[in-house]
Image 1 (cartoon, rainbow, N blue to C red):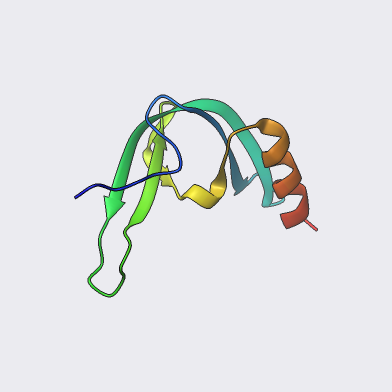
Image 2: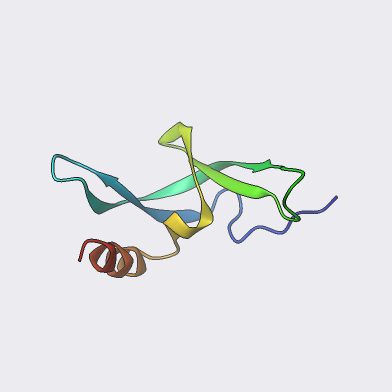
Length: 82
């Protein structure tokens, strides 16, 4: 089976993450993708993909939280914080 992913191991990405004392979305990174995992569910036709960054390999991020540029991540974070 071949699974196509938006990002590859070694790609530099920025992440939006909700946190801090005010629980707002923040931009983290750039950081490199260290690992990719695919979780399969018999009820879905496509797997859930999670990306693990070199600075945080215990917490995976879905593709909609990763961005190729910091600017794109900041635009999304600002929109989510409104």
